Length: 393
Length: 214
Image (cartoon, rainbow over all chains, first blue to last red; front, side, top):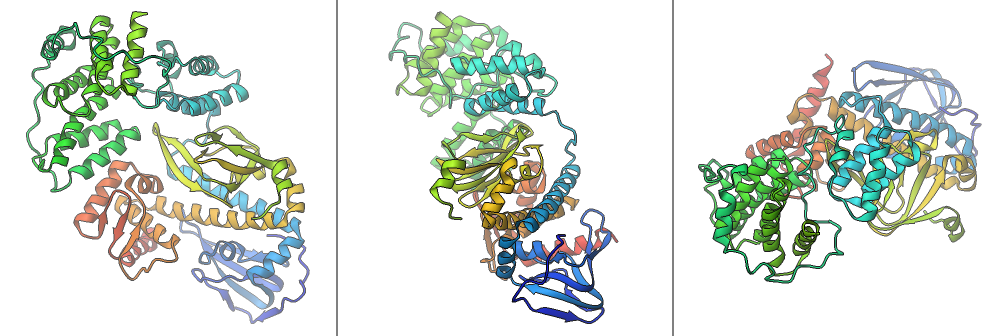
């Protein structure tokens, strides 16, 4: 692969008879060879086709370099044709040699880099990934991913790079809007922005940015506790939204029949579902949560807590999927059936969001106020207070 | 690798936790050496962020930019306060001349990357999902020279990571893992997988591989 090596001092040549094997595929060894005279043929098998490939080493060329340096098994068999002399280098011999001759390294790096590029290309082909990409569309897609998951710092970076390298891109306008939105802390996904994305992001918009975590808006004061003391009791409120026509009749929401879930599996399932959800596999997460709430293996207190949390998480899944009606049903179960659950406050908040999205401002305010007034004054309270100010302001 | 302070003052850059160093699909002209801290390599695949690798002191990344400009193939994000050396392709020659030990290190890194990429390709080329999952476990067992492969081994990997290596959907990987655990071939935990007999997996995969092209 690299020429121009004269016999380096202190390294003894080794002579092989014709047909000798210098090393076999699969051998582990830390020696690197240079062909001095004679012929060496390297035989390997192509990974993707099973085809046998023979390659002849040229005089002065190294072989066995990658497997020795990377300390992995030989990927080819090296065999001599005719009497052959090679130089055998240990890793430290090789290192010394390389340190004295940077040009050799440069040539090798070029060869290695091309090989890596080729393998990566084959990988992409096998994975069915597209070969031609539009970097501007892709940068925008990444920006949108982080924007919607409320990782604004990363979103900002992707949008800025898009503007820097592809200012004429059709995504530039939306990217600029997003950059400004992030800078001003106004990060609710605007409807106008969604159109530009339609061709690359078939997500249903609107319900996608409901995560309470990592949100800005900390400049809002939390509403004082009991701010909504004048409004009706909890059960009144629930009846109120359960009788809301636009959201349909929610009374038919019942817990599924018990299904077959492995014993002692509940925490494991919940963990899985959380992970799936966090990673954007909402459909699958929902399936797992459904499994949990239909399980007849709810025994320990821990399981019960998970069972309650799963109802809440199902609501979150439905929100991600843009199904407010179903989400509402789940949150109402949490609020009605598990009033002591740690998720009640969040459930109120989400119900507020659902009403807000359904343009029912007054109802939204009622539930935001519930959330804002519940102790302790945490980020959910602040979020709720922020929404209240927005809706009233 | 020890490089003096002057070197850092010329090429050194620092990043705060969660800061992006470069983004997938951004044009790449520089490559980096990690002096201290951890860097996460991620990709957004099917609308989710997947961590492909975590690199630390002494590691190199962005090395595909050494020879020519190409869009970055992944996003890199600082996990801690990270100190890096950043080199532009244009001063690569100067860099090599002045730091041949760095040149040697790059050769080693490329050798490993090529092997890892080929190894992953071997997994991807298997068609059967169960074999793919088994071979991911094989690959992970090969990477740790301290494992005693004659006995039960513990691999610190979870289903999403296996899925990413195997190029499979997580649900499918979960199914295979559950199946293998029902057969008592493996034991599943949140953060690790215990394999009863990895030799068994190696045999199954290698016999399949041999028959693949015949």
